[in-house]
Image (cartoon, rainbow, N blue to C red; front, side):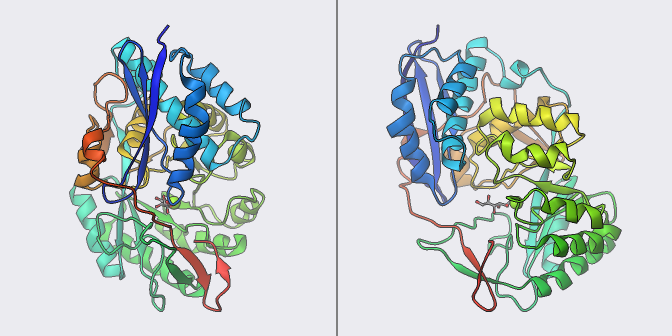
Length: 403
Ligand code: CS2
Ligand code: MG
């Protein structure tokens, strides 16, 4: 038995807020889990400290599945991003401990490596098509096989995915929500032009991705997918809000552009219909927001039955702990698709020393026992929490819209 002796949440803000759970066993083994929920960090920190941690002390850290079921079924009020991020952090930390106790990198416990590396995509963005393509060329020059393109929309002062600092995109940028303005008609004219220029400039060997970020109606999404078909995207992400899985039937009727969805999902139940009806091609659920490695493996197994591949979310608001866990999962899972890799800043990397490394377009989790990542709590303490909201989005007439 590996008795859990203590557990604590560490809230730190090296450039942006992160919530990390650290679990310690009586034998001195420690494990970490990422519990960061962008814009609602303290809700998860409290859920862990006030409601979960008291139930962990004294339990056997080896009983990952039983603890997962205890925290899921025992909560009564199940699912949702706060609950499932908290469960995910416990799950990641327990897998970290188990792999350390076994003296091997976590991927070995998940069935070993199914590939030599985890193919990742970077985020090229710019105010203009030219700026975006220049950023994309930088990524290709760094060896990336896949690049996401997000460009400004003529006539709009801001849009999703375009950051002031090209390499690092952090949307949680203000003490109260920034208000963005959106126009679908302006966007639908701009996006196809971006990818036409991209194929002209970058050729066909690089995978191109795009994130619509929940902003279109199903029929508009069908139109965009059809307009993008000549440019052979790897995927069109979050084409329409995914609360309504049936909406994807409409998109599917109009386009063969591959569809990815799920970064906001937090359980297999959110994914089920989209996967079983093959309405999507990639499932974006992540280790942190979808209940940890234990639950993400269940989602991936369901997806494998229907030829749906993984495409885990990996934005900067998922900490290096989450990235490490995603890489162990991604190295082993049979129906791997691609892993998002929005690089963290050097400030963040210093707080989260890690073994994973990038080489020629692929990440590898490394061979350190466990997740191969930790949190430097002394350094973390130097970056106090700062409230930061994600933006909100309105149409040009002021109506609230999806951000
Ligand atoms: C985006 C994210 O990376 C993505 O695909 O959807 O940047 C998302 O906007 C943030 O994670 C929200 O916190
Ligand atoms: Mg996205």
